Image (tube, rainbow, N blue to C red; front, top):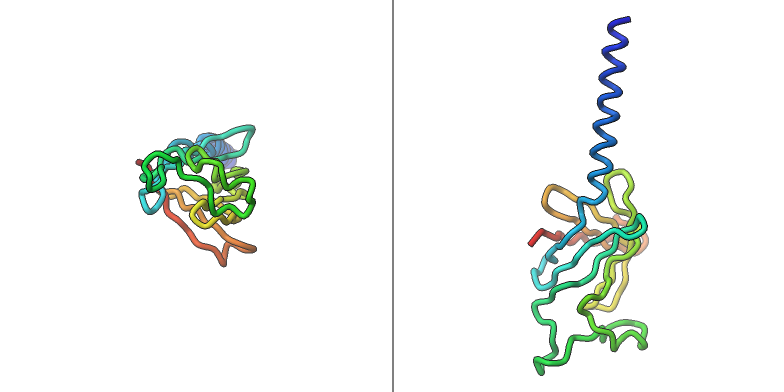
Length: 146
């Protein structure tokens, strides 16, 4: 009987510890992240249980004239080509499941393309995998804290 109580206590303790870690880790990606090239910074935030990211800093926020804010000129939708890239939401609709942020999309203003995406936090690095169809055929970008 005592042996079973010890096992039950151990199992319950592990469950409680994993639940505490689970609730904390879902927001672990919140905050600012530098892209791999270090020329853009994304602020990730949670809204209504999903995670989003907007571009809050760019190394070169202006066109060659030094005055005109850079626009989303490569967007497939001609109506969106006049919007500013600064503060553009480029990560959309991620949900936290089993230690990963899944079912989201990443928009790349450099190419004007949108990709399905998953994000995984590994220590102080955020791995963002963009793909078409299956994650196996995608590309991973490593974001770091500033």
